[in-house]
Image (cartoon, rainbow, N blue to C red):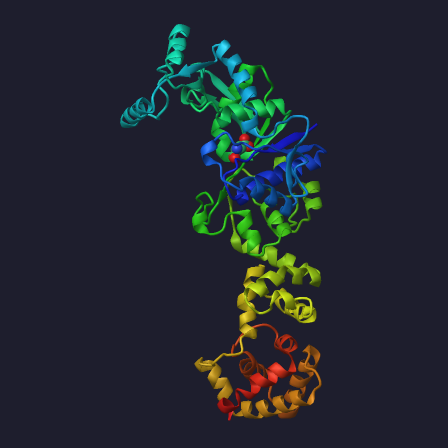
Length: 491
Ligand code: GLU
């Protein structure tokens, strides 16, 4: 049975690249009827950030990439579920120590007492000589007695992997094919740090094996470490899982996606009003492509279509305009109640409604929803769009706009418009449409000369949503008040 895992370090916000890794694991596990577990890799205690686990589980829950084993959240509480726990690495130290002892006993690992200063000096001189910096093996062949006496003296140490010399390690990566690496090009990896915690490299191998992981699907940045992992599997006499390394996610400049170029965390995107299903859909296609050219997928469809063999080799550029397009597509399809629900926090934030008025102004909110549906790509854009129509203290200064207002036909337009609006009971979209049509017929004012001055008189803007929808949102009294305040300019 397929068992895979998402194994993040709790280091703060969840990067979209991490969510993509989690998603591919999830899709593959679901497709194969397997298990998808969440393991916390917190062996680097210096990188731990408060609230990181909650952030992580929130991001997964909100996007529907939900593990069924390991660290999971039930009713707001974080628990560990499954027979292969603990699923938090800092709770597994005795397991790592036990396995490390086996490696030491077999001469596959050794104590290293080198000081930081010595290691730095070695590295500097290697660099000067144009060599790739690597541990020089200084402690590789200490006698057991030497080791013991140094330990007894209390000299701090790490434990390193003792790689054999000049041996080719090879494995097959699901995306990149056969990978071969000579141990001469590898470092004697630190497996246990001076603080008694294992490094990622030791812990990941032991955990993946003990947790029965069949497929390791993770970011490409781990590909260069994988030969060391494969060697560790050999040392322990274990079968290695299938490795699948996902292509990097890149900025427009083809460097690795970083914060400097804008939002990169799942939380940032959700806070801006990107829909979780759009983000998931977008990330699914960032490094994987379906057999046909379908672009919009539900999670269920993704599970059906997902196939490890269609993961791309080359880096995937994070195209924000494509994400926006996709999110806009999802917004267009939303039922009006859901659309409004998503919009409310942004409208409140913009100051156009108070929390306590939300219930009474449902109809108004729905009109706003319909008006914005076609105009925004993510919900945080609502404020700017709404300002275009809801601000009523505008002053028209744009020369082109003033020209429309000064036109001879605008005087006539103004009077009939006021007259006709005054005469209606309520001003809704269809009634607004009818009024504009009547004016067109009656006054022979059409096209631009009809719509532009009307729009400018009502909103102060030359562009914006459909004018009749604006009339619908603002209503008769507000429209009349705005028109009347224009009187002196028009006449
Ligand atoms: N803890 C590693 C990370 O945060 C996991 C890498 C792996 O999946 O093996 O990237």
